[in-house]
Amino acid sequence: MCGIVGYIGKRNSLPIIVDGLKRLEYRGYDSAGVAIINAASEIKLFKKAGKIKEIETQIPVDVFDGNVGIGHTRWATHGEPNDNNAHPHTDMHNKFYLVHNGIIENYKTLKKKLSSEGYIFHTDTDTEILVNLISYNYINHNKNFEVAVRLSLCEVDGTYGIACLCVEDPGKIIVARKGSPLMFGVGQDEIIVSSDASAIIAHTKNVIYLEDGEYAVLRRNGIKLKTIDDEDIHREVQQIEYDLEQIEKSGYDHFMLKEICEQPDIIQNTYRGRIKFETGEVKLGGLASIKDKIFNAKRVIITACGTAWHAGLVGEYMLETYCRIPTEVEYASEFRYRNPIIRQDDVVILISQSGETADTLAAMREAKKHGATTLGFVNVVGSTIAREVDAGTYIHAGPEIGVASTKAFTCQLMSLVLLTMMIAKEKGTISEDEFKKIGAEIELLPYKMKQLIDKKDYFKYIAEEFKDAKNFLYLGRGLNFPVALEGALKLKEISYIHAEGYPAAEMKHGPIALIDENMPVVFIATKDGTYDKVISNIEEVRARKGKIITIATEDDDNIADYSDYVLRVPKTHDMLQPIINSIPLQFLSYYIATARGCNVDQPRNLAKSVTVE
Ligand code: M6R
Image 1 (cartoon, rainbow, N blue to C red):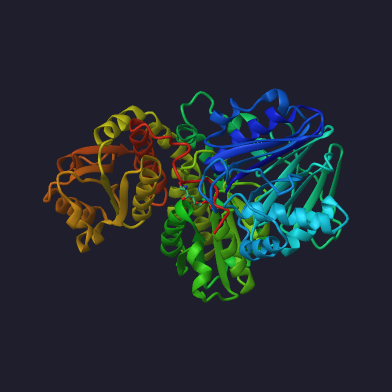
Image 2: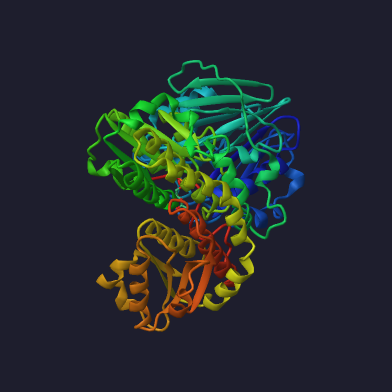
């Protein structure tokens, strides 16, 4: 979490940094700050609790004009989000200014050491310890900025992405990374540092990714790249693959709304060039190198967090049903802490939109340690998980800015459909006929999704009816149980209404006690093998006067008799139905949250990419 931006070049750095921070605000928005080296080689610092939009108007631009600077938007880990704890942090002598994303785990030990050397601290942050450590090493190592940063990082346990300025060496920014993403764009006589490409894309598409354990000394027209063990590195410049337009709101009120509405187009990017519709034959180029391992896997373990974990649950159902491969789904945050049994012939699938989620990354490394084959389903191109897995396939959802994941979820589901088809074909576990049907339905999917986008006003109307609810239950069975979980997660994260997802039949083992006339219950009741059972579960809720909202297919003539409200969706193949069913749920949560006046793109306490444990 937290966003870092830096600039060194010929232009005024402040507007570039502020614009970059706005783009990175999805990573955290408790407080923000900038440190700029001005024309008189003084470092000017401004930092404050609040969002960058409020803060930028208070920065005295006349004294903050300089060609070198760093900025930060924070998601608090150590110390509450207030002005004092905002970044950049400076050392006791005000010689160094540091922005940091990550956690310095041994900060207490380091603080003790520095305190015994007379260092005094003014904030509750681990970052202040690191910047003072740099200062300490600077004084003790011939006032060499680079050596001071490098030696300090060698003393640190934990994670960091950092950018650091030194008053006595003003022509440089030193950046480093371990566990928190960092990259820099290489322009004409300028370098733009950022936690991700979104703050760079307006200036250049040429980027260099830092790897863990590396640092870089950036000058206006020079880059020195090294490991913190002092070895030289050469790294090729890479290209950012998307355009500025893709990370703008394009007239929508919120990124989330834009991202929901663009799904019919975006989903095509996930399967384009990978499937022959007529035969259902699938080719996933990124998996070619590990094909045999996948086809012969005795077991698949899917691990992920949040929405990606829900996609994994759908994947489990598909891989077991259609490929007959035993599949387990694990929370990445739990995986490595329970001494999991991982075998060399296991395939471990990591699903992650950002490709930077700390727990998912750690789960991947755990799997690799045990010799399993790792396979990534990642959205962000060039992200850490994407680079470290044995093989992978990008989901191609494009930049997802809204904190609540929407299009990444449906593209993750589509990627899992493709994987299932590829394996099932090889193993012969689905008939040719079925393949053709799925292929034909995939071709129709964007049109069917579009029909739902066109119904958004109706979803808005339903949302208005329920905007004051205190609780919600979401129920589904089979493939639609994870969809229920996802619907509930979407609602709680952006509207702050308590919502629970449950397997519909489990309701009577506990949650049924919650049902009264004030409880809205969303049933995902599209026609599949469990339909009749779901209808019985609806009856159980009706008998207790719960308010029933059903997601049902257009051809379902009876469902209205059981429901207070019906959200109609087009029928598709069972494997694709979760993609369709997710859309009304996304709209429901979006419109409930906006009706309650919530900031849907930046919900409280959340950050888009969770790069701390
Ligand atoms: O980037 P990732 O897919 O690894 O992120 C995983 C979760 O943090 C993420 O899905 C989170 O639950 C979203 N806020 C859900 O909308």
